[in-house]
Length: 387
Image (cartoon, rainbow, N blue to C red):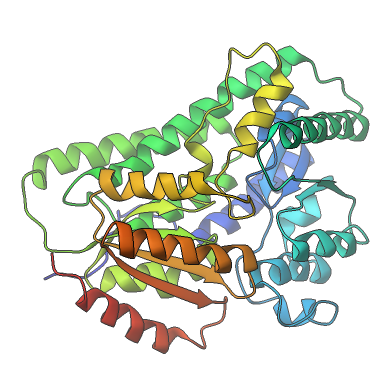
């Protein structure tokens, strides 16, 4: 079996894409662009676009600035939170430097307290996210959506009209469809491309600030992959285990988990993650006469473990296991991410007891100290799967 990871000749790694984005962002700022830095998929992109600004994902996925962050933050805190703050504290993230405003969201206690410290470095607007989906929660969240709109208007001295928002909704919905179509290439059997490439392209797309250009690039790659699969792979049986990755955002551990397990002979074909298909499943209702309610409904329905209860995530994992013909599930939990760590109980129960599939829970951080141990565990996990 050839386990070498096959990537296209023009493939751009995540660090390469992030670095190239720095230069594009500087050119945009030099031309007068307004920039809003963000960390999470709960923030309504549409309002930022409607304000005539650019949303940019802030640096949060390496361990480089964590020692500096630990001067003010506890060591037993999620690495994503520490890295986010560390980059700001050390002024080593150009995207944070170029941001006119940072927007956060209360997806966990660690984040909401970190945002207080972040606000001392740069103005940080925090959206108070409810942790349920009942009528009262939706009404509260709609109020937070409107408050964010008003903050953008005040910050950038603009008036955001409903027409502006509807135009942005259509643009962002197009992107969701395009990215979802790309990620759903994983339903093809045998797998048409690596999960490493899929995840990298989705994350790296944040550094292409022209939304239409980003869509065009992914649409082109989707068509290329489909054509190649039809010509060379369709009807060819594969014994490589088909895996679903779920849990926390995985950009910071992509090399030591996702790339590693694929080089061992598996195919990661599906991502139930914040930086995977989770935010792209549901579109904003373009026909809802109340644009703020439409945005509130869509974003509140994201299947993050912060929601309690979160049965919709279990339902979607069940659906994905069937539609992607999954043999095993790897759950990635970043250290001290309590909501995902607790919810892993339900994921394991679903995968093992109901679906009778292999399951592996990995708790990790951004360091390389556990790389050898992880390789051993991943290899043992694959041995339990007979395809």
